[in-house]
Amino acid sequence: MRAGSGCSTRALRMLLAIAAGMLCMGIVSARPQSSGYHLANKIILGGPGGWDYFTVDSTTHRIFIPRGTHTMVLDPEGNVVKDMQNMIGAHGIDLAPDLKRGFISNGAAQSLTIFNMVSFETILEVKIPKRNPDGILYEPFSKRVFVFNGGTSMNATAIDASTGKILGSVPLGGKPETAQADGTGRIYVNVEDKNQILAFDATTLKVLHTWLVAPCIEPAGLAIDVAHKRLFAGCHNNLMAVVDYANGKVVATVPIGQGVDANRFDPATGLAFASCGDGTITVVHEDAPDKYTVVEKISTQRGARTMALDTSNHNVYTVTADLGPPSAPTEKVPNPRPTVVPDTFTLLIFSR
Image 1 (cartoon, rainbow, N blue to C red):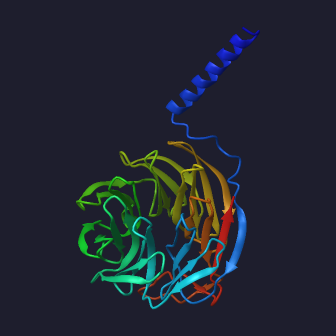
Image 2: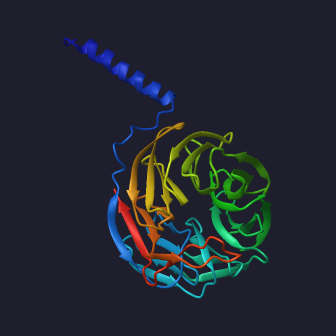
């Protein structure tokens, strides 16, 4: 035996014991000093239409942006691949890569567009009468797409993703915002005006849990960490609330910017994101399932309240436009949003 080998063996055993202890305590990964993100490109796309939810296909890296009368499809560098036209109120979007299909909610048309992800041709237009389709989620376990209806509807419509058949609805008891699925057939959705997250079964359409998420007020964005059973809710009182979806308890909160509308989580890096209309994206590291640290606040641009994350290349995308003063308030719209300067719609790409 070489001199000192016993000490080396004991040191190795000690390190292994420490590592095992860290795993037992739920420590996920070492906290980075910063997120490493920087602005890689800023592209003025222009054209008519507003924006809200958008998404990215992490296989092809294509970006899908609904804009009212049309939906833009971009490559990872922001070049237009396709511009799907003749839509009425195109609002939310989600993708089913296993079916090679995409789904767009059309609020003004009270419908769901099902399109081919390869050719971008419309396969089917599903009418959802007397509803206001807003948020949207494809749930792969049941192979159903769920449309979360705004206005006075206060429910979600379940649709067979292959046939377009309406299968039923889920009462939500309030105004739904973003939803996430855990891969086992359960769906979690923010009920914004009730300060709640509601869980329901995608197959039976039965409500399973309704959780108050205080101190979170008006949860809007929502992201999910399936490995650790955590939800990340973006709250309009400048907080991100982390919720254990095994029991509905808020396990942590961190400060974020003002006007949050989207949250994302990257399981490979342990980073959670909150994009806000004040022109910031707060980046939070998951130190452990119940411990979170803000590592950076990225400067974006005013109005860039929504976001998409490519979990393959880790790019973060956000969109906005140059904004002017709001229009005059009305009875129906007492707090109007700022006006949009024509042809200034912009895509911001952040890379590590």
